[in-house]
Image 1: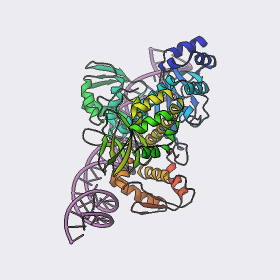
Image 2: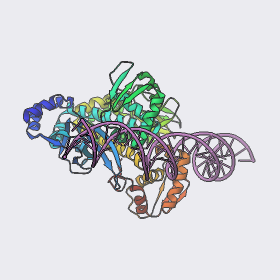
Image 3: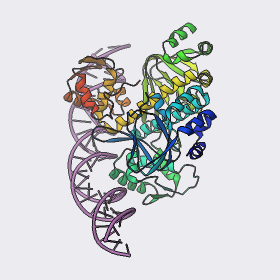
Image 4: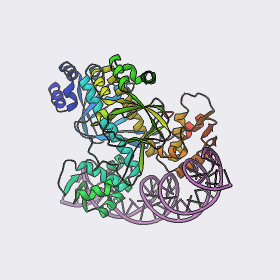
Length: 238
Length: 238
DNA sequence: CGAGGGTTTGAAGTGCATCAAATAGTGTGG
DNA sequence: CCACACTATTTGATGCACTTCAAACCCTCG
Protein backbone atom coordinates (compact mmCIF):
# COMPACT_ATOMS: atom_id res chain seq x y z
CA UNK A 1 0.00 0.00 0.00
CA UNK A 2 2.83 2.41 0.78
CA UNK A 3 4.34 2.16 -2.61
CA UNK A 4 0.91 2.73 -4.11
CA UNK A 5 0.60 5.85 -2.03
CA UNK A 6 3.99 7.12 -3.10
CA UNK A 7 3.02 6.51 -6.66
CA UNK A 8 -0.26 8.35 -6.19
CA UNK A 9 1.24 11.35 -4.57
CA UNK A 10 4.24 12.04 -6.67
CA UNK A 11 2.23 13.15 -9.69
CA UNK A 12 0.45 15.80 -7.74
CA UNK A 13 2.13 19.15 -7.77
CA UNK A 14 0.90 19.95 -4.29
CA UNK A 15 3.13 17.29 -2.74
CA UNK A 16 6.34 18.43 -4.37
CA UNK A 17 6.75 20.93 -1.61
CA UNK A 18 6.49 18.56 1.32
CA UNK A 19 9.62 17.69 3.22
CA UNK A 20 10.88 14.13 2.72
CA UNK A 21 10.34 13.49 6.38
CA UNK A 22 6.67 14.48 6.32
CA UNK A 23 6.10 12.57 3.11
CA UNK A 24 7.33 9.43 4.82
CA UNK A 25 4.98 9.97 7.71
CA UNK A 26 2.11 10.65 5.35
CA UNK A 27 2.76 7.46 3.48
CA UNK A 28 2.73 5.49 6.68
CA UNK A 29 -0.61 6.85 7.73
CA UNK A 30 -2.30 7.03 4.34
CA UNK A 31 -5.04 4.66 3.44
CA UNK A 32 -6.94 3.81 0.32
CA UNK A 33 -10.68 3.44 0.49
CA UNK A 34 -13.30 2.28 -1.98
CA UNK A 35 -16.65 4.00 -2.10
CA UNK A 36 -19.57 2.56 -4.03
CA UNK A 37 -21.85 4.96 -5.86
CA UNK A 38 -23.97 6.95 -3.43
CA UNK A 39 -21.58 6.49 -0.51
CA UNK A 40 -20.97 9.50 1.74
CA UNK A 41 -17.31 10.06 2.69
CA UNK A 42 -18.23 12.65 5.28
CA UNK A 43 -21.05 15.01 6.06
CA UNK A 44 -21.07 18.80 6.32
CA UNK A 45 -19.82 19.91 9.75
CA UNK A 46 -18.35 16.51 10.58
CA UNK A 47 -15.16 16.51 12.56
CA UNK A 48 -12.31 16.65 10.04
CA UNK A 49 -9.33 14.34 10.49
CA UNK A 50 -8.33 13.61 6.93
CA UNK A 51 -8.03 15.23 3.58
CA UNK A 52 -8.43 13.29 0.37
CA UNK A 53 -7.21 12.69 -3.13
CA UNK A 54 -9.45 11.14 -5.74
CA UNK A 55 -7.78 8.15 -7.37
CA UNK A 56 -10.68 7.25 -9.65
CA UNK A 57 -14.39 7.93 -9.95
CA UNK A 58 -16.22 11.14 -9.17
CA UNK A 59 -16.80 12.87 -5.85
CA UNK A 60 -19.52 15.47 -5.43
CA UNK A 61 -19.11 18.19 -2.81
CA UNK A 62 -22.30 19.91 -1.70
CA UNK A 63 -24.39 21.26 1.12
CA UNK A 64 -28.08 20.96 1.66
CA UNK A 65 -31.01 22.53 3.45
CA UNK A 66 -33.42 20.76 5.79
CA UNK A 67 -35.78 19.98 2.95
CA UNK A 68 -32.98 18.28 1.06
CA UNK A 69 -32.34 20.86 -1.65
CA UNK A 70 -28.68 20.68 -2.59
CA UNK A 71 -26.22 23.40 -3.44
CA UNK A 72 -23.30 21.90 -5.30
CA UNK A 73 -19.83 23.18 -4.52
CA UNK A 74 -17.83 21.11 -6.98
CA UNK A 75 -17.49 17.71 -8.60
CA UNK A 76 -14.00 16.25 -8.57
CA UNK A 77 -12.12 13.45 -10.29
CA UNK A 78 -8.72 11.80 -10.53
CA UNK A 79 -5.86 13.59 -8.77
CA UNK A 80 -8.02 16.32 -7.34
CA UNK A 81 -7.75 17.22 -3.68
CA UNK A 82 -10.51 17.97 -1.18
CA UNK A 83 -11.08 18.53 2.52
CA UNK A 84 -7.66 20.16 2.87
CA UNK A 85 -9.03 23.59 3.81
CA UNK A 86 -10.54 22.18 6.99
CA UNK A 87 -7.33 23.00 8.80
CA UNK A 88 -8.49 26.63 8.67
CA UNK A 89 -12.11 25.89 9.54
CA UNK A 90 -12.10 24.65 13.12
CA UNK A 91 -11.34 21.18 11.85
CA UNK A 92 -14.79 20.63 10.43
CA UNK A 93 -15.73 19.93 6.86
CA UNK A 94 -17.59 22.79 5.20
CA UNK A 95 -19.51 20.44 2.88
CA UNK A 96 -20.68 16.88 2.35
CA UNK A 97 -18.69 14.57 0.05
CA UNK A 98 -20.49 11.86 -1.90
CA UNK A 99 -19.28 9.38 -4.50
CA UNK A 100 -21.44 9.76 -7.60
CA UNK A 101 -19.67 6.80 -9.18
CA UNK A 102 -17.83 3.90 -7.63
CA UNK A 103 -14.69 5.68 -6.52
CA UNK A 104 -11.29 5.05 -5.03
CA UNK A 105 -9.92 7.67 -2.70
CA UNK A 106 -6.68 8.17 -0.83
CA UNK A 107 -7.11 9.63 2.65
CA UNK A 108 -4.32 11.45 4.42
CA UNK A 109 -4.09 12.80 7.97
CA UNK A 110 -4.83 16.51 8.29
CA UNK A 111 -2.62 17.03 11.32
CA UNK A 112 0.49 16.32 9.25
CA UNK A 113 -0.61 18.82 6.62
CA UNK A 114 -1.27 21.35 9.32
CA UNK A 115 2.10 21.07 11.00
CA UNK A 116 3.94 20.91 7.70
CA UNK A 117 2.25 24.02 6.41
CA UNK A 118 3.12 25.92 9.58
CA UNK A 119 6.80 25.29 9.01
CA UNK A 120 7.16 25.12 5.29
CA UNK A 121 6.77 28.45 3.51
CA UNK A 122 7.00 27.02 0.02
CA UNK A 123 4.08 24.75 0.74
CA UNK A 124 2.19 27.63 2.30
CA UNK A 125 2.71 29.68 -0.84
CA UNK A 126 1.47 26.84 -3.01
CA UNK A 127 -1.55 26.45 -0.81
CA UNK A 128 -2.31 30.15 -1.03
CA UNK A 129 -1.99 30.17 -4.80
CA UNK A 130 -4.41 27.35 -5.08
CA UNK A 131 -6.79 29.07 -2.70
CA UNK A 132 -6.56 32.26 -4.72
CA UNK A 133 -7.24 30.34 -7.90
CA UNK A 134 -10.25 28.75 -6.31
CA UNK A 135 -11.42 32.11 -5.11
CA UNK A 136 -11.37 33.53 -8.58
CA UNK A 137 -13.26 30.52 -9.81
CA UNK A 138 -15.91 31.12 -7.17
CA UNK A 139 -16.19 34.76 -8.15
CA UNK A 140 -16.71 33.65 -11.69
CA UNK A 141 -19.33 31.17 -10.61
CA UNK A 142 -21.32 33.90 -8.90
CA UNK A 143 -20.90 36.06 -11.95
CA UNK A 144 -22.11 33.26 -14.19
CA UNK A 145 -25.21 32.70 -12.15
CA UNK A 146 -25.96 36.39 -12.04
CA UNK A 147 -25.26 37.42 -15.59
CA UNK A 148 -25.66 34.35 -17.77
CA UNK A 149 -28.78 32.51 -18.82
CA UNK A 150 -29.01 28.74 -18.91
CA UNK A 151 -27.70 28.14 -22.46
CA UNK A 152 -24.75 30.45 -21.82
CA UNK A 153 -23.90 28.68 -18.58
CA UNK A 154 -23.86 25.42 -20.49
CA UNK A 155 -21.71 27.07 -23.14
CA UNK A 156 -19.25 28.15 -20.48
CA UNK A 157 -19.14 24.63 -19.07
CA UNK A 158 -18.46 23.20 -22.53
CA UNK A 159 -15.75 25.75 -23.21
CA UNK A 160 -13.91 24.69 -20.08
CA UNK A 161 -13.99 21.13 -21.41
CA UNK A 162 -12.41 22.16 -24.71
CA UNK A 163 -9.36 23.49 -22.90
CA UNK A 164 -6.07 23.40 -24.78
CA UNK A 165 -7.66 22.36 -28.04
CA UNK A 166 -6.82 24.88 -30.71
CA UNK A 167 -8.95 23.38 -33.45
CA UNK A 168 -11.92 25.08 -34.94
CA UNK A 169 -14.03 21.95 -34.54
CA UNK A 170 -13.83 20.04 -31.28
CA UNK A 171 -15.56 17.00 -29.94
CA UNK A 172 -16.01 16.59 -26.25
CA UNK A 173 -17.67 14.19 -23.87
CA UNK A 174 -19.58 15.23 -20.79
CA UNK A 175 -17.65 14.06 -17.75
CA UNK A 176 -20.79 12.78 -15.99
CA UNK A 177 -24.45 12.42 -16.71
CA UNK A 178 -26.61 15.31 -17.80
CA UNK A 179 -28.62 15.42 -14.61
CA UNK A 180 -25.44 15.94 -12.63
CA UNK A 181 -24.13 18.55 -15.05
CA UNK A 182 -27.43 20.33 -14.63
CA UNK A 183 -27.13 20.44 -10.86
CA UNK A 184 -23.47 21.47 -11.14
CA UNK A 185 -24.70 24.45 -13.15
CA UNK A 186 -27.49 25.18 -10.72
CA UNK A 187 -30.40 24.29 -12.94
CA UNK A 188 -33.06 21.57 -13.24
CA UNK A 189 -32.53 18.60 -15.59
CA UNK A 190 -35.52 19.74 -17.65
CA UNK A 191 -34.02 23.19 -18.00
CA UNK A 192 -30.70 21.70 -19.00
CA UNK A 193 -32.30 19.66 -21.73
CA UNK A 194 -34.19 22.63 -23.14
CA UNK A 195 -31.23 24.98 -22.79
CA UNK A 196 -28.99 22.56 -24.66
CA UNK A 197 -31.53 22.53 -27.48
CA UNK A 198 -31.58 26.29 -27.53
CA UNK A 199 -27.79 26.28 -27.73
CA UNK A 200 -28.02 23.97 -30.71
CA UNK A 201 -30.17 26.57 -32.43
CA UNK A 202 -27.69 29.31 -31.68
CA UNK A 203 -24.50 27.59 -32.78
CA UNK A 204 -23.65 24.63 -34.95
CA UNK A 205 -23.23 21.55 -32.81
CA UNK A 206 -24.22 17.90 -32.59
CA UNK A 207 -25.31 16.11 -29.45
CA UNK A 208 -25.21 12.32 -29.24
CA UNK A 209 -25.80 11.17 -25.69
CA UNK A 210 -22.84 12.43 -23.71
CA UNK A 211 -20.82 13.22 -26.82
CA UNK A 212 -20.91 16.69 -28.24
CA UNK A 213 -19.31 18.05 -31.39
CA UNK A 214 -18.89 21.78 -31.74
CA UNK A 215 -18.31 22.92 -35.31
CA UNK A 216 -16.72 26.24 -34.53
CA UNK A 217 -15.49 26.99 -31.04
CA UNK A 218 -15.27 30.69 -31.80
CA UNK A 219 -18.97 30.72 -32.50
CA UNK A 220 -19.57 29.25 -29.05
CA UNK A 221 -17.19 31.72 -27.43
CA UNK A 222 -19.01 34.55 -29.10
CA UNK A 223 -22.40 33.36 -27.95
CA UNK A 224 -21.33 32.53 -24.40
CA UNK A 225 -18.88 35.24 -23.49
CA UNK A 226 -21.11 38.14 -24.38
CA UNK A 227 -22.13 37.75 -20.76
CA UNK A 228 -18.62 37.40 -19.36
CA UNK A 229 -16.62 40.07 -17.63
CA UNK A 230 -13.57 41.07 -19.60
CA UNK A 231 -11.68 37.78 -19.74
CA UNK A 232 -12.07 35.95 -23.07
CA UNK A 233 -12.60 33.21 -23.59
CA UNK A 234 -14.03 31.93 -20.34
CA UNK A 235 -10.72 31.71 -18.63
CA UNK A 236 -9.43 28.27 -18.04
CA UNK A 237 -8.87 28.19 -14.32
CA UNK A 238 -8.56 24.94 -12.52
CA UNK B 1 1.58 60.90 7.40
CA UNK B 2 3.72 58.12 8.82
CA UNK B 3 2.26 58.37 12.26
CA UNK B 4 -1.21 58.37 10.72
CA UNK B 5 -0.28 55.20 8.90
CA UNK B 6 1.00 53.55 12.04
CA UNK B 7 -2.20 54.49 13.78
CA UNK B 8 -4.26 53.09 10.93
CA UNK B 9 -2.47 49.83 10.75
CA UNK B 10 -2.14 48.85 14.33
CA UNK B 11 -5.84 48.21 14.83
CA UNK B 12 -5.92 45.71 12.05
CA UNK B 13 -5.27 42.17 13.09
CA UNK B 14 -3.63 41.35 9.79
CA UNK B 15 -0.66 43.58 10.54
CA UNK B 16 0.12 42.12 13.94
CA UNK B 17 2.10 39.43 12.23
CA UNK B 18 4.39 41.64 10.20
CA UNK B 19 7.98 41.97 11.28
CA UNK B 20 8.93 45.34 12.75
CA UNK B 21 11.34 45.82 9.93
CA UNK B 22 8.74 45.34 7.22
CA UNK B 23 6.25 47.51 9.07
CA UNK B 24 8.75 50.33 9.02
CA UNK B 25 9.25 49.96 5.31
CA UNK B 26 5.53 49.82 4.75
CA UNK B 27 5.00 53.01 6.67
CA UNK B 28 7.60 54.75 4.61
CA UNK B 29 5.97 53.80 1.39
CA UNK B 30 2.33 54.06 2.42
CA UNK B 31 0.16 56.83 1.14
CA UNK B 32 -3.29 58.10 1.90
CA UNK B 33 -5.58 58.99 -0.95
CA UNK B 34 -8.99 60.66 -1.14
CA UNK B 35 -11.53 59.42 -3.61
CA UNK B 36 -14.70 61.34 -4.39
CA UNK B 37 -17.88 59.39 -4.99
CA UNK B 38 -17.78 57.58 -8.31
CA UNK B 39 -13.98 57.53 -8.49
CA UNK B 40 -12.32 54.34 -9.72
CA UNK B 41 -9.28 53.22 -7.71
CA UNK B 42 -8.34 50.64 -10.28
CA UNK B 43 -9.95 48.64 -13.04
CA UNK B 44 -10.29 44.87 -13.44
CA UNK B 45 -7.09 43.41 -14.91
CA UNK B 46 -5.04 46.51 -14.19
CA UNK B 47 -1.46 45.97 -13.18
CA UNK B 48 -1.44 45.59 -9.40
CA UNK B 49 1.20 47.45 -7.38
CA UNK B 50 -0.68 48.23 -4.21
CA UNK B 51 -3.17 46.80 -1.81
CA UNK B 52 -5.53 48.96 0.17
CA UNK B 53 -7.21 49.59 3.49
CA UNK B 54 -10.41 51.59 3.69
CA UNK B 55 -10.08 54.43 6.20
CA UNK B 56 -13.56 55.84 5.66
CA UNK B 57 -16.34 55.71 3.10
CA UNK B 58 -17.42 52.73 1.01
CA UNK B 59 -15.59 50.89 -1.75
CA UNK B 60 -17.43 48.68 -4.18
CA UNK B 61 -15.60 45.76 -5.82
CA UNK B 62 -17.14 44.45 -9.01
CA UNK B 63 -16.64 43.21 -12.53
CA UNK B 64 -18.68 44.01 -15.58
CA UNK B 65 -19.52 42.73 -19.05
CA UNK B 66 -19.19 44.66 -22.29
CA UNK B 67 -22.74 45.91 -22.06
CA UNK B 68 -22.01 47.34 -18.62
CA UNK B 69 -23.91 44.86 -16.47
CA UNK B 70 -22.15 44.60 -13.13
CA UNK B 71 -21.50 41.62 -10.92
CA UNK B 72 -20.72 42.83 -7.42
CA UNK B 73 -18.02 41.05 -5.47
CA UNK B 74 -18.21 42.97 -2.23
CA UNK B 75 -18.73 46.39 -0.69
CA UNK B 76 -16.18 47.36 1.94
CA UNK B 77 -15.83 49.97 4.63
CA UNK B 78 -13.51 51.13 7.41
CA UNK B 79 -10.57 48.85 8.24
CA UNK B 80 -11.31 46.37 5.51
CA UNK B 81 -8.58 45.21 3.18
CA UNK B 82 -8.68 44.73 -0.56
CA UNK B 83 -6.42 44.02 -3.52
CA UNK B 84 -4.10 41.91 -1.36
CA UNK B 85 -4.77 38.66 -3.20
CA UNK B 86 -3.24 40.06 -6.38
CA UNK B 87 0.12 38.68 -5.29
CA UNK B 88 -1.24 35.28 -6.28
CA UNK B 89 -2.91 36.46 -9.46
CA UNK B 90 -0.11 37.47 -11.81
CA UNK B 91 -0.07 40.88 -10.18
CA UNK B 92 -3.32 41.98 -11.72
CA UNK B 93 -6.48 43.00 -9.98
CA UNK B 94 -9.34 40.54 -10.37
CA UNK B 95 -12.00 43.26 -10.08
CA UNK B 96 -12.69 46.97 -10.37
CA UNK B 97 -12.73 49.13 -7.22
CA UNK B 98 -15.00 52.15 -7.07
CA UNK B 99 -15.77 54.61 -4.28
CA UNK B 100 -19.54 54.72 -3.81
CA UNK B 101 -19.14 57.50 -1.24
CA UNK B 102 -16.38 60.02 -0.76
CA UNK B 103 -13.71 57.75 0.69
CA UNK B 104 -10.27 57.79 2.22
CA UNK B 105 -8.00 54.90 1.51
CA UNK B 106 -4.55 53.84 2.60
CA UNK B 107 -2.47 52.27 -0.14
CA UNK B 108 0.45 49.97 0.59
CA UNK B 109 3.01 48.41 -1.72
CA UNK B 110 2.26 44.82 -2.71
CA UNK B 111 5.90 43.84 -3.15
CA UNK B 112 6.53 44.21 0.56
CA UNK B 113 3.53 42.05 1.40
CA UNK B 114 4.76 39.49 -1.07
CA UNK B 115 8.26 39.20 0.28
CA UNK B 116 7.08 39.30 3.88
CA UNK B 117 4.60 36.52 3.31
CA UNK B 118 7.24 34.37 1.69
CA UNK B 119 9.37 34.50 4.81
CA UNK B 120 6.89 34.85 7.62
CA UNK B 121 4.89 31.72 8.33
CA UNK B 122 2.66 33.29 10.96
CA UNK B 123 1.54 35.89 8.45
CA UNK B 124 1.06 33.21 5.84
CA UNK B 125 -1.18 31.28 8.22
CA UNK B 126 -3.23 34.39 8.93
CA UNK B 127 -3.56 35.06 5.25
CA UNK B 128 -4.70 31.51 4.63
CA UNK B 129 -7.26 31.68 7.41
CA UNK B 130 -8.71 34.82 5.99
CA UNK B 131 -8.78 33.29 2.52
CA UNK B 132 -10.54 30.23 3.88
CA UNK B 133 -13.07 32.42 5.64
CA UNK B 134 -13.68 34.33 2.45
CA UNK B 135 -14.03 31.08 0.57
CA UNK B 136 -16.74 29.88 2.87
CA UNK B 137 -18.49 33.19 2.53
CA UNK B 138 -18.43 32.84 -1.24
CA UNK B 139 -19.81 29.33 -1.02
CA UNK B 140 -22.60 30.70 1.07
CA UNK B 141 -23.21 33.45 -1.42
CA UNK B 142 -23.65 30.93 -4.21
CA UNK B 143 -25.89 28.90 -1.97
CA UNK B 144 -27.97 31.97 -1.18
CA UNK B 145 -28.46 32.82 -4.80
CA UNK B 146 -29.37 29.25 -5.63
CA UNK B 147 -31.64 28.38 -2.74
CA UNK B 148 -33.10 31.60 -1.41
CA UNK B 149 -35.71 33.89 -2.86
CA UNK B 150 -35.43 37.66 -2.77
CA UNK B 151 -37.08 38.30 0.63
CA UNK B 152 -34.94 35.60 2.22
CA UNK B 153 -31.76 37.03 0.74
CA UNK B 154 -32.69 40.38 2.24
CA UNK B 155 -33.41 38.63 5.53
CA UNK B 156 -29.96 37.08 5.48
CA UNK B 157 -28.39 40.46 4.78
CA UNK B 158 -30.28 42.00 7.70
CA UNK B 159 -29.29 39.17 10.02
CA UNK B 160 -25.65 39.77 9.29
CA UNK B 161 -26.18 43.40 10.31
CA UNK B 162 -27.66 42.38 13.66
CA UNK B 163 -24.50 40.52 14.58
CA UNK B 164 -23.65 40.32 18.28
CA UNK B 165 -26.97 41.77 19.39
CA UNK B 166 -28.71 39.33 21.69
CA UNK B 167 -31.92 41.28 22.08
CA UNK B 168 -35.25 40.09 20.81
CA UNK B 169 -35.95 43.43 19.16
CA UNK B 170 -33.16 45.08 17.19
CA UNK B 171 -32.96 48.25 15.18
CA UNK B 172 -30.49 48.47 12.36
CA UNK B 173 -29.54 50.90 9.66
CA UNK B 174 -28.72 49.92 6.11
CA UNK B 175 -25.04 50.64 5.53
CA UNK B 176 -25.68 52.19 2.11
CA UNK B 177 -28.59 53.09 -0.08
CA UNK B 178 -31.21 50.56 -1.09
CA UNK B 179 -30.23 50.52 -4.74
CA UNK B 180 -26.73 49.46 -3.75
CA UNK B 181 -27.98 46.86 -1.28
CA UNK B 182 -30.11 45.49 -4.09
CA UNK B 183 -27.16 45.10 -6.43
CA UNK B 184 -25.07 43.63 -3.59
CA UNK B 185 -27.76 40.98 -3.30
CA UNK B 186 -27.94 40.45 -7.03
CA UNK B 187 -31.39 41.86 -7.64
CA UNK B 188 -33.03 44.91 -9.22
CA UNK B 189 -33.97 47.94 -7.09
CA UNK B 190 -37.63 47.32 -7.92
CA UNK B 191 -37.34 43.74 -6.78
CA UNK B 192 -35.66 44.86 -3.59
CA UNK B 193 -38.47 47.26 -2.81
CA UNK B 194 -41.14 44.67 -3.40
CA UNK B 195 -39.26 41.92 -1.59
CA UNK B 196 -38.81 44.15 1.45
CA UNK B 197 -42.57 44.68 1.50
CA UNK B 198 -43.13 40.98 1.31
CA UNK B 199 -40.73 40.49 4.21
CA UNK B 200 -42.77 43.02 6.20
CA UNK B 201 -45.81 40.85 5.65
CA UNK B 202 -43.97 37.75 6.82
CA UNK B 203 -42.41 39.10 9.99
CA UNK B 204 -43.04 42.06 12.24
CA UNK B 205 -40.79 44.92 11.25
CA UNK B 206 -40.80 48.64 10.58
CA UNK B 207 -38.98 50.35 7.75
CA UNK B 208 -38.28 54.06 7.87
CA UNK B 209 -35.92 55.07 5.10
CA UNK B 210 -32.64 53.31 5.84
CA UNK B 211 -33.66 52.46 9.39
CA UNK B 212 -35.23 49.13 10.12
CA UNK B 213 -36.66 47.78 13.36
CA UNK B 214 -37.12 44.05 13.71
CA UNK B 215 -39.51 43.07 16.51
CA UNK B 216 -38.31 39.54 16.95
CA UNK B 217 -35.04 38.41 15.45
CA UNK B 218 -35.94 34.75 15.93
CA UNK B 219 -38.93 35.25 13.70
CA UNK B 220 -36.61 36.57 11.00
CA UNK B 221 -34.16 33.71 11.51
CA UNK B 222 -36.98 31.24 11.15
CA UNK B 223 -38.24 32.79 7.94
CA UNK B 224 -34.82 33.26 6.38
CA UNK B 225 -32.88 30.20 7.40
CA UNK B 226 -35.39 27.65 6.21
CA UNK B 227 -33.39 27.96 3.03
CA UNK B 228 -29.95 27.73 4.65
CA UNK B 229 -27.72 24.71 4.81
CA UNK B 230 -27.26 23.50 8.33
CA UNK B 231 -25.66 26.54 9.96
CA UNK B 232 -28.10 28.64 12.01
CA UNK B 233 -28.42 31.45 12.14
CA UNK B 234 -26.87 32.66 8.91
CA UNK B 235 -23.38 32.32 10.20
CA UNK B 236 -21.65 35.54 10.89
CA UNK B 237 -18.51 35.28 8.87
CA UNK B 238 -16.54 38.38 8.18
C1' DC C 1 -39.01 76.32 -5.42
C1' DG C 2 -37.22 73.34 -8.61
C1' DA C 3 -33.77 69.77 -10.15
C1' DG C 4 -32.19 65.34 -9.62
C1' DG C 5 -31.41 61.22 -7.45
C1' DG C 6 -33.42 57.51 -4.83
C1' DT C 7 -37.57 54.76 -4.14
C1' DT C 8 -41.97 52.91 -5.02
C1' DT C 9 -45.81 51.26 -7.91
C1' DG C 10 -48.02 49.38 -11.99
C1' DA C 11 -48.26 46.56 -16.12
C1' DA C 12 -46.35 43.33 -19.08
C1' DG C 13 -42.85 40.00 -20.45
C1' DT C 14 -39.29 36.30 -19.76
C1' DG C 15 -36.88 32.56 -17.90
C1' DC C 16 -36.75 29.00 -15.13
C1' DA C 17 -39.18 25.74 -11.96
C1' DT C 18 -42.58 22.47 -11.29
C1' DC C 19 -45.65 18.76 -12.21
C1' DA C 20 -46.95 15.19 -15.25
C1' DA C 21 -46.10 12.01 -18.65
C1' DA C 22 -43.88 10.03 -22.61
C1' DT C 23 -39.58 8.20 -24.52
C1' DA C 24 -34.90 6.50 -24.71
C1' DG C 25 -31.25 4.00 -22.69
C1' DT C 26 -29.10 0.61 -19.56
C1' DG C 27 -28.51 -3.37 -16.98
C1' DT C 28 -30.73 -7.56 -15.09
C1' DG C 29 -32.25 -12.24 -14.88
C1' DG C 30 -34.42 -15.70 -17.35
C1' DC D 1 -31.17 -12.66 -26.95
C1' DC D 2 -35.43 -10.97 -25.07
C1' DA D 3 -38.51 -9.01 -21.56
C1' DC D 4 -38.61 -6.39 -17.62
C1' DA D 5 -37.26 -2.91 -14.34
C1' DC D 6 -35.23 1.11 -13.53
C1' DT D 7 -32.99 5.30 -14.56
C1' DA D 8 -31.86 9.14 -17.52
C1' DT D 9 -33.66 12.28 -20.69
C1' DT D 10 -37.00 14.72 -23.18
C1' DT D 11 -41.43 17.06 -23.97
C1' DG D 12 -45.65 19.48 -22.77
C1' DA D 13 -48.43 22.48 -19.90
C1' DT D 14 -48.68 25.67 -16.33
C1' DG D 15 -47.19 28.76 -12.59
C1' DC D 16 -44.25 31.87 -10.18
C1' DA D 17 -40.35 34.99 -9.39
C1' DC D 18 -37.90 38.22 -11.04
C1' DT D 19 -36.94 41.57 -14.77
C1' DT D 20 -38.03 45.28 -17.68
C1' DC D 21 -40.12 49.48 -19.02
C1' DA D 22 -42.76 53.36 -17.66
C1' DA D 23 -44.32 56.61 -14.61
C1' DA D 24 -45.26 58.55 -10.23
C1' DC D 25 -43.65 59.85 -5.84
C1' DC D 26 -40.57 61.39 -2.35
C1' DC D 27 -36.72 63.51 -0.36
C1' DT D 28 -32.86 66.41 -0.20
C1' DC D 29 -30.21 70.22 -1.27
C1' DG D 30 -28.80 74.16 -3.80
